Image (cartoon, rainbow, N blue to C red):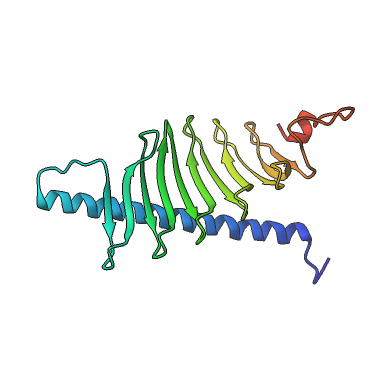
Length: 193
């Protein structure tokens, strides 16, 4: 113990700050998307009764695309905000019944994702520089939250949450998707279910 604080207390305070930061990013992304949509709708309503197109591009004074509303290769709608270097930094997209908000770094790598999956369940995902998931915050179909810390190979290294009975659960050792030969798998108790 350093300075009388426990490592667990420090981890919990860091997690609380991380969750607050993610909430601020999520709110910012929502505001930007709503503003972009509102301005687009306002422009359409003041100019004509309707405007139909497969792609819309917003250009800066230098003629560079800074925002785009179009369809991907699967004919799913998407909206992107692009930096001055031409790299997408924020993407809003649909994929079937799922909805995604992706924040990308200056090199175009996905670093933070917000999603609503096909069951309508929310997720937050932090990715490392190699775009590997390292932290996941999710909720199950009964509204029970959980968070997991992942190794670079997607092994769950630690996690905690609340199960569907309202009981806390915790993982404090690596869990692999399948046990190695001759090794027992994690029990239901280890997984906190």
